[in-house]
Image (cartoon, rainbow, N blue to C red; front, side):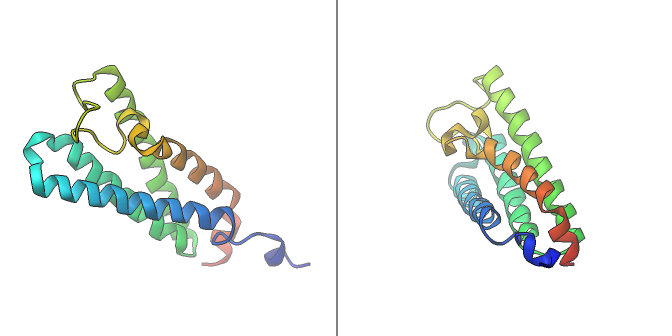
Length: 144
């Protein structure tokens, strides 16, 4: 049996599920941030800009995860690492100082409270993403 057939492609099984979650988070974060920036930016500009940034990071990760090649692997790894750092920093700050991102109304951000408003998916997703990338490194390199 050849090495190609024994290694699961990144776009099947867990890889496809991961890509779907990144796609959903991209739409959710970007739609939320654009709506909030357009309708009431002055209420919580930092939170809305962080949500916009998160949406862009999710978009970059989604595209990189479906693109073959070593460069895509590096872009995905970088985007997902930035995402993990963002979730940990913003999550920690939001817990340490509740006034930064109040957990009421729409004055929060995607990464506040480690993504609690999104069922903690923003906390789990980069961890799973980095583990997946580590397991699929050879697949990315072989296809590009």
